[in-house]
Image 1 (cartoon, rainbow, N blue to C red):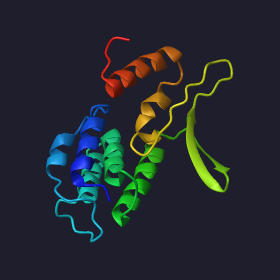
Image 2: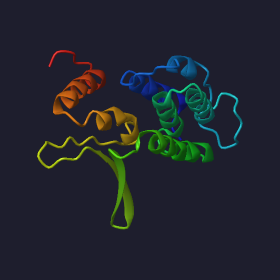
Image 3: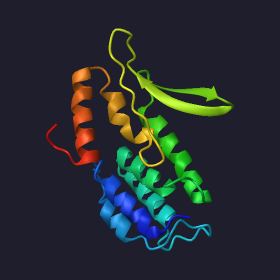
Length: 172
């Protein structure tokens, strides 16, 4: 299991690329003093504190914050029961709030493994922007790209913002 100091280091870096609206992620980090737990006790455990923050964010109507909190709870990968639940809740929350007639989830199977992805506003006459997720930067946290897919100008602006946040380069 990854050490708590490393989890916090990665989280601090990743927080810079997100636009939290209803909570201070640094306060959440400051309340964590244990690695993800296998015992289910909430006393400062990484996964359970982030799950609690996600639930509070949902209660306060901050869906994007909740998705990011669930992402941190399951980071770097779902190992504990709580992390597995957080991963499931993350996808469920995303799909309940963002999938509609314009944003659709698709699942394909490659060598017997499922691969899910989302599409929005597909049009053969327009360029296609592909945004990939990984273990840290998951696809569900970039819903803003799906919502802005109607115009490439919006996508260019979003891409510049994403590039600035992830690289620290402002003028490009």
